[in-house]
Image (cartoon, rainbow, N blue to C red; front, side, top):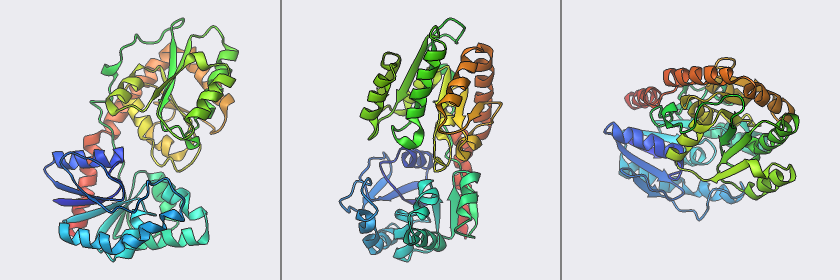
Length: 364
């Protein structure tokens, strides 16, 4: 197939989609508002002079690109068009007059955007109404999407490379009482991911059990990076927190595998599917998550993960201590996680399903 993705060319998720479809012999094009370099894919830039971090008012410039989008699509003449994100690219696609395309919803476009105002709600509904079929990364988000559209929704999880994210990447000995207990996460340093709750929980753990050799690995960058560094200092745990900064996928796989407990305390439902949780599971690491539906769907609570209430550092700390005091629980849940990720969310299985869904749109 000749596939055209209308999406952010600099997104790691879109790059993952492109790489997989290219490996299957498909011709891949990406129409994007931002530049990107995806080897093998043809990038078509619709430059509006924005980075993507501006206000909604500034992003109204996107809506002027409908005619250009349609012209580029007609020049590509793809077999199938898959638009990603309902309230930017999806809105432009809706205004362009394109027909016969699939629209993938991502998270904040469904959970957060329509709650801003009546105008935002109307724009979302209009965007959803113009797509032929909708894709959602999780059942939880599909349920939320049905509040705004009655169109068919296919659940299409992103999937994880279970060869890259693997217990084989681990360089440390397995945790035992008296040895270093390493917890951490690989997430953007943004309030929605609960990084401050993780830091506060780590401080509580050190207060309750000072003899525990606790270390915290945090990989990622973001606008709140300096704020979180200062918080670690204020909490008195700067000496046990290691800030890894931005890491490529290979390094992320090694960081997850070297943890004794992955902690993902996101606070918003717009965490529509826990790719990071699946990466940790695939690496053979037990996962401690907050009660966000997308995270719970990506794990099997009680088998591969433990769930605590969101924005509750005390509950998070108590759960961390339970794992620290039970090395066998860490090993057992880690092994369960590996089996679960390989069976449910391998890259090959998830993208073969997506390929089938796109082929169905093409046949239609």
